[in-house]
Image (cartoon, rainbow over all chains, first blue to last red; front, side, top):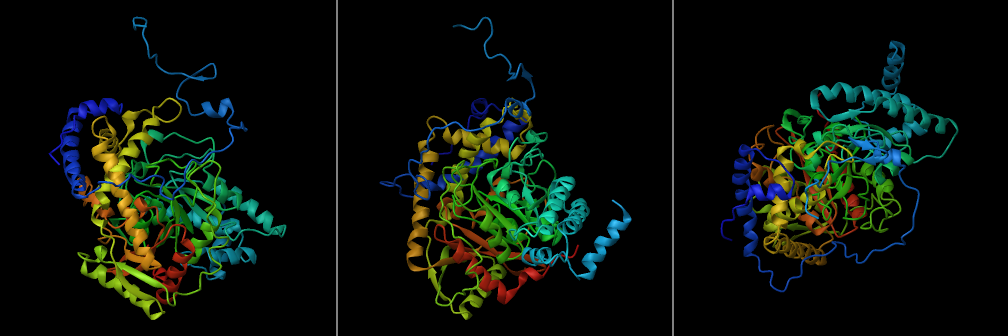
Length: 100
Length: 486
């Protein structure tokens, strides 16, 4: 497998992680070592091999969709850092100038 | 606490000549049932030990003294009322801090959840508490279960009770150190790629990674969902089977569980190994450290003397295990850790430690557009081959025995700056998770005063047989009797 370089900045954005320049540099080096190690899987012939499914062979496990007693609103909100009128409070996603 | 109370408690233990270090669940359970010791007395003495030893070993993130004593008092009332109780009633147990405990802080070893107290109990916690087990605390771990040594905890590393300059093994580091130092009689753990077996081997304990789906994952903070197995650590094989009796079975809240359990895992435990076929996979013994090989083969010899038939088997894809695992696991980690947003509970993502960040970035990359086929899909194909290796081997033999760790417990700090080197500590333990098969770590001796373990691996849902083999070996060797000097 050709040497793969991770675009750490892009991936960090996808994962919603903020990394310092120092962390990015360190990760780049470490992850390229790890990727070159896992690259050995290229040696394994997997033509005509299906990827594994559920490991003990279960398929399509379903159940009736019935309501049952659950958390109270109070219990569900207990650990929230911010709440407003019985709801989780979050920062606004859109601004007034966001396009529709 | 009054000094009079202290005195009476010590007197009870002294009078009965109980050494908490030697005590097993089996024995403690009899003492409680025969009313020779009360659940409160027993738990007070373990709570004292837990507190004292924690300063040295850092096994616990939380010790639940008040809750534990309240529960123990209830058990004593039930006993006074001549209620028939589970053998685990009144037994002090610690939960790895990934197990949700209602109203009790559950941190996952991470600062992200430093202030989080769940609103419900994990299924396994509920099942154990319903049988009147006493939760004495929550144990330390590599944050989120990410590690092989215990050093990745945001609350400091756990020390090995046999040598405090060495790691206890991870990620269930505190669970292992707590039982090995007799701060409790059993502990729970999770095993995604060795996290129960490795610390069990490093701390002279019996540790079960059950078949995937035998024990519910519900309410246990997820690491890699297709690999996570929920097990426990004890001093002896019998004790281990006792705990599985309560934890195993189908759970409405985990659709991967199956009612594929044996009624009582202790019932046939002394059946022996006569004519049992044991396979030794050549790939695990090739480059093995000479001393570890010698001890492991001595254990096999013991079983041969008891009537087992030994033969060599091959698991040809063994060497691809760590590479396969370190694609699948971080991929699933990145997905599972995406939920930590600091909105509903816990702090924000800036609190993730460096190992969690490393795995999130790696996993996000291997799942990202353009790379998914080359990494995750490829790994899931190799995973099928690894599973088929085990299936083919089990056409020839009943169980497989192999070492648990390529090294003895290593020095704290030795591998912490080199993630790949640390990942390679898992070389003997990840394939069982990839194949979903059960594996029991049992002690197999000491080298230079440090313990080592071996794995007994079987077909899916063959835990009863693994206990029989482990028990036969244990009765001959009794390595569990050698407790650490603390």
